Length: 199
Image 1 (cartoon, one colour):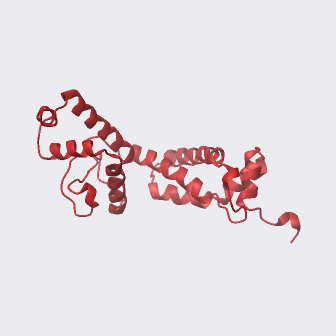
Image 2 (tube, rainbow, N blue to C red):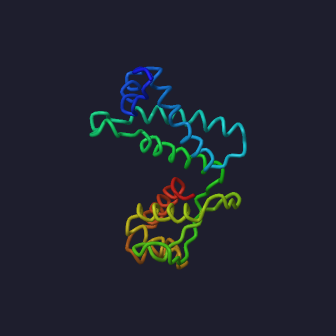
C-alpha cells in the first residue's frame, strides 16, 4: 500500500474540510453515509420526495456540523471521531421530520405514570398525533416526556398539575395569587416547548 493510500483520520479530514478542501469534505461525508441511512430509516419516510429532501437536508446539516467543530478543543487527534457531532445534528433533523410526518399538535393530556421519574411523578404527556403510528417506539416517547418535564420550571409543573385536576385558569390564578395572563402565558410556553420535543 502506498503512503498516499493510507486512510486519513477523521481529524485530518476535518482539518481539510475546515479550509474547504473539496476532496476531504467529500471523503468525510461518504465515510458517514451509513449513519445518514440509519437515521433516514429510523424516521420511516414512505414518500420518495421526502426521502430526497431528507438526504439534501442531511448534507446541509453535515456542513453545519463541520462549522460547529472547534478543532482547537480536540485533545486526542488520533482517536477523535466526527460521529458524535454529526449524529447530534441528525437527531435534530429527525425531530423536524417526525413533527411533519406525524402532525404533532400542541394539545396535551396528563395522567399518572409510574415510569416517569420521581420529580415529575403524576404527569404523562400524550402528543395529539394526526394518526397513530406505532413505529414511534414507547421508549422514544418516554425519553421525550422526560426531556420535556426536565425543562419545565417547578411553577409550570404546578400549573399543569392543577390543570390535570380540572381547575380553570382563573381558579389557578386566584389560588397562586397571580394574574390570569401569567397562567395563560406559562401554559402557552409549555405547549410550544412540547411541540419541539414530544414525539
